[in-house]
Image 1 (cartoon, one colour):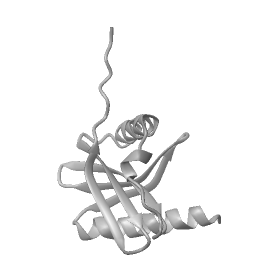
Image 2: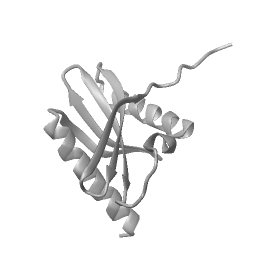
Image 3: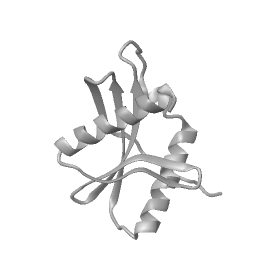
Image 4: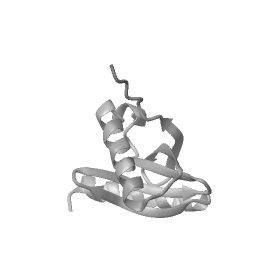
Amino acid sequence: MAIHNTLGAEGERIAQEFLIKQGMIIRETNWRIGHLEIDIIAETPGRLHIVEVKSRTSDEKFDPLLSITPKKIRNLVAAANAYLNYTKLDIDVQFDVMLIIGSENIEFIPDAFYPPLKTYR
């Protein structure tokens, strides 16, 4: 397994532990449909959390929201819609981002972005 894959898997494990401590129930990890993937799908009463996890080594500094591009947002929204259709859930959805730096520094950004609205002309 490549080093970046190991780092990502460890970051997602740390993120899951953090979310569980916050009282969330982990429904799915690395849920895929086609080329789309959701890192973590968690739940609190009445709300589904779509969590994107970004892991970095301890010496890197960056803004995690810069890595959430418009294309990434479209893919996460499409994956969330597919998950809701697949599970037949009728629940509010929230998109969160977690930044894991090393194994100690965790930054949780709830409601990191809102799905873009489609406009029709």
